[in-house]
Each structure stands twice: as structure tokens, then as C-alpha cells.
Image 1 (tube, rainbow, N blue to C red):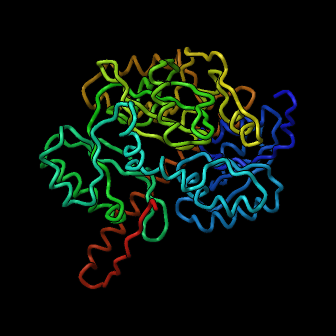
Image 2 (image 1 turned 90 degrees about the horizontal axis):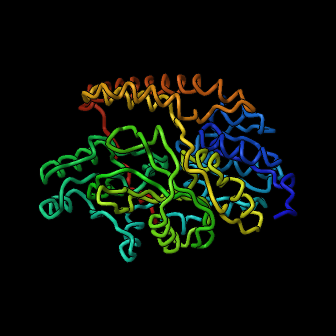
Image 3 (image 1 turned 120 degrees about the vertical axis):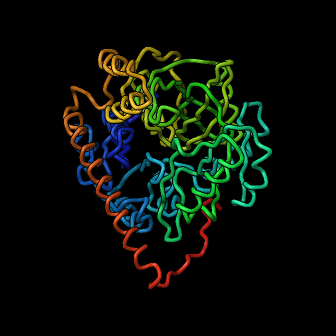
Amino acid sequence: MTDLDPTAWRTLVLDADSQAGLCVVRSLGKRGVPVTAASDSRRSLGALSTYAEDAVVHQPPATAPAAFIDELVGVLEDGDYFAVIPVNDATTNVVSRAKARLEATGTTVGVPGWDRAKLAYDKARTFDIAASLSVPTPETHAPEGLDDVERLADDVDYPVVVKSRSKYVRDAAGRLRLHRVGDDSYADGPDALVATYRDVLATNDHLNSFPPLVQGYVPGETTTTVGLADDGDLLAWFQERRLRTTPHSGGNSTVITGMRDQRMRDYAAEVVDALEWTGPLQIEFMHTPDDEYYLIEVNGRYWGSVPLAVDSGVDVPWLHLCQLAGYTPTNPPVYREDVVHQRLLYGDIKWLGERLLDGHPSAIPAFLAAFGYARPVFLRPEDPLPSVAAPLYWAGQRAKKVWEKARDAWVSESAASTEGDVETDVAAPVEEIR
């Protein structure tokens, strides 16, 4: 690919306020690509980067998807962009659905259309496809509602986890609502399963039309194969394992490193082939104590720890842009397995707090030791402003979340006090994946 002209590939990178989005901005900018950092935040980390030539602020894709697409079409029509690349879950979801409209601007869209993307976004569909493969999977049920759960509760192996079929689910107003697995998502018996499932539906009305999965709990260490695919072929790949997560029982990685395992890679390639996937993706496995890899989920988008792959020698954002330009990327013959990232300092602090509350004081030296061997993911001497702004950005985000929780609690109390006096409309069910 020696005849490349990156200066002709002006790219709009969405989700530039995230660490993955910042990594895409940095990766492409270093190669000479003219990059515009786009975000719904006026204090985007990507916009502060030395490698961003311009910045765009737009409506939030999760809470105002229609307005976001309208704005995005205008930006693409006015900006003469070669490509637009979504990064995070909600944005990728919205952009995938509107791909035809966005491509009508003459811009290449870096995500599959919704007919293909929904196979990865809906975990029920993903595991239905995986059932015909040689890849080990946990026992997975896609009940149609609470009645179904009550019928199957006595027939499943415990413990189990109740998890949304998609990280983001549309509500009746068309907004995308975030769902994460937490410590209260697990059940160790029939009564606990029914109670947990009932609580999930009671506190998330929109999930009644898109009921969560019931999936067997698989003990072990979270590992992933990530990379870039083309029509079902895994062209470039990297593997990682999570040294620490929050919550400790399994979740977002806070300290992470590279690894290499051919068996997991073969499983991942089989999944990619079955999905006929094109573009970046993350395939998550649980590595069990008996040395087996169980498929846990597939994320058809960039992943939060993409800086680790780039620092280890697999520059997925650059390879992705080359793919969009019509070239066929190839995996580097080797990549580093010794790079360790401290992905989220605030997440690592949360991990420490959880471990101390659980009675594990040895977590303190483990936490402190990471400062000696793990690289802070934002810190780049050649690109200092995002490194300086990241802690302030995090503090602002945390303050915003605290305020939102307080506001929601106040609104709930006010609504409860007037419940007998106000008539409410029940929204028609909305199906998330069709």
C-alpha cells in the first residue's frame, strides 16, 4: 500500500470525547489524514488533540438520534469528507440505521448497514447463530417475558445472569437507553431469577417489548479477540485479557494487557465468518479454569481498549480507513504482548474501593503497583492537552451523573406524591431489533 495518499481521506471521527475516539483521531492524524473530531460535548478530548484539524459539536445520538442524523447529514454535505467513522455503541447503532441517507452525501460510512449490524447488536440473534458453530457458548435463553422465565426457572443450571439483548435499547420515544450487567444482575436459584427478571422489567418499561436474556454464568478470566474483518474474513486481529475489571465480578477493564492464543483466534474467526462481518469488532470470551474459551458477546464496533491494540502494533483505525478506501489490510506478522494499559484511573479507583469493601486489603499494593508497570492510556507527551484535560473531563462527567441521579430521584418522588391525581399515557411497545 505504498501509493496511499492519506491527505485525500478527510475523515470525520465521531465520539471524539471517548478514549477510543481519541485513539482513532490520533491514529489517523499521525498518518497525515485530515481529521475532524466530532462529539456532543463542547470539551471533547479529541478536539484538543494535536492531530485534529477541526472540531464539530452535534446533538447527542442516544437521546436525540433524529436531530443528530439531520445535523450529521449537513456536516457531511458541507465538509467534503471521504469517510465518517462512528466509535461508540449508541452512535454506531444510530449511524448504521441511517447509513443509506448518510452515504447519499458522497461519504463512505465506516459501519455495516442495519440488516447486518443487528446480528451483532442483538445478543439473542448472535447466540442463535453461534449455536450452530463449534464455539463453546453458555446456556442462553431468550424469553418472551416474565411468564416464560417463570416456566423455565426450574430447568436452567445456576447461577445465571439476566442481561439486556443489546447494550442500548430504544424506548417509546426513540431514545437509546443504556443497560449494563451489575452485581444485582445475577441469580443463584429459581426464585431469585424470577425476582431479578421482574425487577429489571419493572424498572425498565421499554424492555417489556425487548425482553432480556437469561444466560448461564461462566467463571474465569475475560479475554477478547479484536480486530478488523472483511465480509467474514478476519483480516487483522489482536488479543487481550483483563487484569482488573469494574465491577470485580466482570465488566469494563481497568488494567489490561495483550496475549496470544490460536484457539481463541480460531473461535473468533468462526464467529466472524458466520456473521459475514465487515469492519472493526470485538469478540469477548470467558477463559475458564479448565482452559476453555466460551463466547460471551460480540460488539460490532470499536471497543474501549483500542489504544492497547494500536500501542501493541495492530493499528486498527488506520487499517480500517485503508479498507474503506478499497485496500485490503493485512495483519502484522507479530504484535507485542507485553504492553499493559491502565485504561481508566477512576475505574481502577472504583475497583480498589470494591475490593476493600469485600475485605481484601491486599488490593492496595496491587493498585499502587500498577503505576509502575501500566501505561496511562491518555498520556502521550507528543499530544499533551488531552492528557491534561482527561482528569478534569472525568470529574465533570462524575459531577453530571451525581446531579442526574439526584434530579431523577427528586422527579420520582414528585411523581409518586401526585400519582393518584394524574392520568398517564402508556406508550405503545417499541421493538428494538427488526
